[in-house]
Length: 222
Image (cartoon, rainbow, N blue to C red; front, top):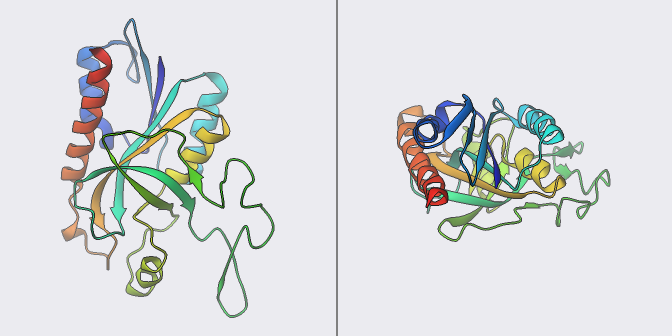
């Protein structure tokens, strides 16, 4: 089985890289293998553009059985907990469209530039094609600008989404377009609230994310 693990930054998956180095043979810093699996790690950089570009280039050169996106995320849904690991099973590009003269938003689908069921969209949403049975499923939005002001957060809360990231929709779009089994795994580093980094817990999110990833890859060894 060939696996591609995609992360925006090396920091987010550094404990996993240490585990893979200790338990798999290495072709180089980001390529691991044994008799059953080969694991390629792709560090894309932050944001949708970098993610789509790096994944597109990688998938044009190599075929994979599974693609996994791992990273941290902000929680819109207050029922989630800091450090909780979830799977984003549906995602969308937030505020992708235009605004009218009154400032109201018009989606790219309402504009007629893309049909809401044009592949790989389903009713305007990008939905994963595979579930992980041991993780809670949530919905996500992918943003160019993370939310940190009261007015924009109030609007965000009215749309019933659970988490926000800066790469998820680009990951799903690329994976689904290439018809590869895909998982988006996120750990909650902060709540989407008026920006206050003192309330964030990135170390906890990274620790719990990597505990799950190590458990996942360790199961492949047995």
